[in-house]
Image 1 (spheres, rainbow over the protein chains, first blue to last red):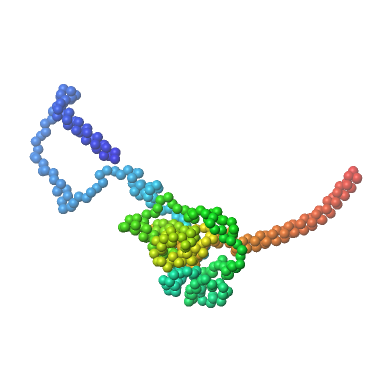
Image 2: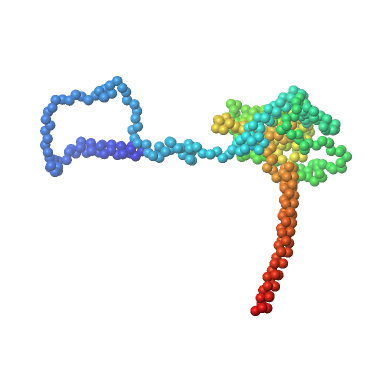
Length: 197
Length: 207
Ligand SMILES: [Zn+2]
């Protein structure tokens, strides 16, 4: 920036001198302190300088014209902390999964656990679609693995669609213990509120 | 049961709705956007757990929540609600599922009906962020249930109680030991100074 500015300043000075000399002529010689008259001895005319002599068969490459400031050089090298910071910084949002011990990003699911669950989910999904198809689904779906049917009472299966998986339940897939095993007795005297809003 | 739950009197989504909608880029414009969301809501009701791009999942979640809450509020005999369900569910057999399965499932819940989780991503990849959108109470294995540090988990409660009992027993043991020691010291000390005292008394009498 400064380089270019000085260049412009030089240009202006040059222009000024040029115009002053053209319009007002040179200053009178009497003003000069010493005037030395010099006569140049006539020598043999030198050979005209040509760029070809210098380059020959080669060619010229682009080179930097101006000096790059320290700030610019450092910015290029390290980046700017506010915009693009090129230095290596420690990543602080990595956590260890409590279940499998793999690392995962904070606020996201563990990749290892998710892959496992995703595969199982896909199997179950396919089984449900295969079993129920396009028929209207009007009942809650229950997944049954092998050797699990006799554990529940018969009334548990009322109003539920059973989808059987033909394999053992994975050890990490725990059963839902909060599911009600029996329906509420129908002779309760409680009345649900209606027309309240 | 006979008292009305005040929170259920007012129709209100149980999730935070941001001021500005997410962008879902589409050639068809706003119309295509709604089409996309209808497809997603239909898929969510059908499969109960789906993986989506972040924007689409977050936007579709609001519509799914609204649909379920309307269904719970008005039931299946309400014409406008039926029209809404008919519009948002592209597969018509899912309307049965909405009213016969999801309404009983969520009738008494006090929280939102869907769950939105961030899917894992490859670090420094340029893929869009993925989310997993699921209905609560689905039959699939539980995602992201990291309760091991939860103080109220039954195992942790039991462990805490066991630790407490063990410590109490140890404290009692220590206290007993200290009391025994003090008694011993007391018995020895009461004997020893008495002799010195007698000697000093003798000295005093001699002088
Ligand atoms: Zn894990």
